[in-house]
Image 1 (tube, rainbow, N blue to C red):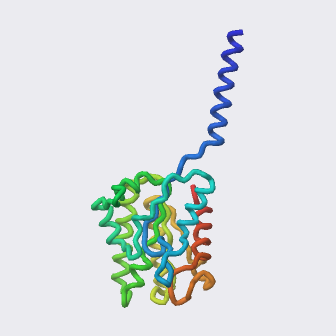
Image 2: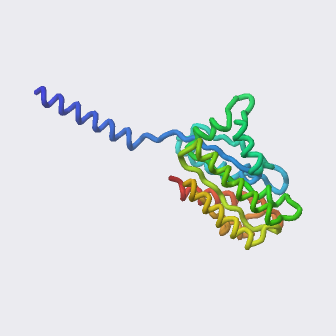
Image 3: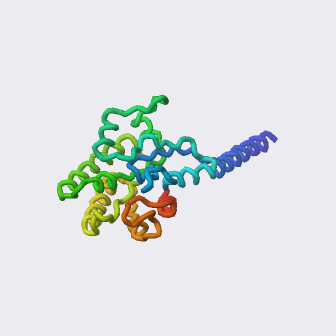
Length: 223
């Protein structure tokens, strides 16, 4: 009789554990870093729906989103300013959340930076691209120090200023840097080559359809 009671307790514990494993989902902290594309900026200088917002919705629908932090992204963000934010441990007001805290707590970090930085130059020179790639290496290394979970970096893409050859070389190097720090690199060129995803093909800001397609690509590559 005593053995039966012990066996029943063991079975109950095992069943409870299995139920917990199949129903429990760790709550997510999503951190977005980058420039206007990360914020969902449009050619009308107003914020629209970004791929990050679609990612937030995805986790909210599954009731596992804890925090969605977008305040560290900035429309005019550059690799230089973002590195400086991390070095000085930039703090949000009034929450007092620091960028190092946000990076370390995030389950997923998305990064999209460089489109504003390069396209806002009057003339993009080889040294500008080299400096951008050098700082991207520094940036990803710093972020990886604080976070060991999934970091997703989006590629750059062709514009009236950034030609195909330049983009291919930039993205090749970004892919190599990402691999070095075990970061998920997603080439979005096949999406951005479609004029359907722009408000105006002469402006590099994407419409909500383009952002939705980027979200789908991110979702397909979630770990």
